[in-house]
Length: 90
Image (cartoon, rainbow, N blue to C red):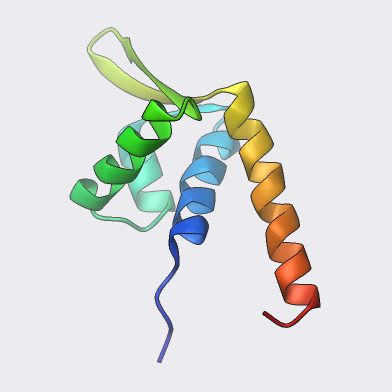
């Protein structure tokens, strides 16, 4: 039985899905790539936007999520934390 993803892994999944598309991605792509329901994704997206990690832009009636500098930095920090926790078997 697979264990559930923690908040940090979900956030990393969302941010990496946006980064993979060049730093800007449509909601549907983020939802599928991060394997979240729309409702759950929106909760995380709003939290990330409030903290300045992503920006939500509207281009010609199409919404896009864009990584900020802080978002790119967070991806690297989360990866560093995961590497450390794996090294210590946590």
